[in-house]
Image 1 (cartoon, rainbow, N blue to C red):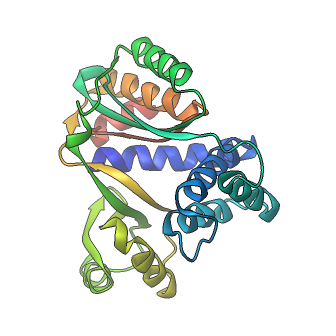
Image 2: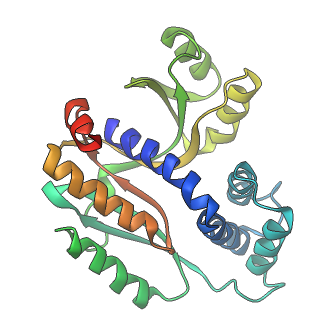
Length: 249
């Protein structure tokens, strides 16, 4: 899962920059719209909507923006004609890539995503070609100095998590998506503020990349993440520390 953590760290820092441009607000508005459309506008009765609202609040999206997105999803305002699509493909070195999409024009988005893959020496694949390589999990990235690994493992398992791993200078806590809210609340009550908290698609195995392939895959991931219709990007790569240091250098 190290590859996922590499990208999660890069994506988190990138989101801080994107947020200044309002790009993250746009993506989270779409997530709220779709959640409200599928499960109603009450976050107490719609867990998916509650998570989307929490994510929006975490980046200081104004309350009015959140309410407008909910109303678009419930049909009280226009602009809620979005559908969820999962695109699958292969990047350089055979890396498996999943793109979670929210779009109002599937044909347009498919063509644009296909072009991004091709420009990075990758290929958009058929439905089901790589999804089997990923498990849907709640994931939290926590600074490595918050507590001892054994103590964090015991605490996290007691509150619904299923694993804790050290990845570089971070702890990666994972759980079943149904336990996400419970684990999140327990961590915060303990005074542990995750650097990243999301429900993600975690690869069951990874492909090690050298410097050249690592640069190409990260470029593909960034281009996909920059697309307005892409909500989340997951891939099964791992870049060893030495290669990552050379890429950053």
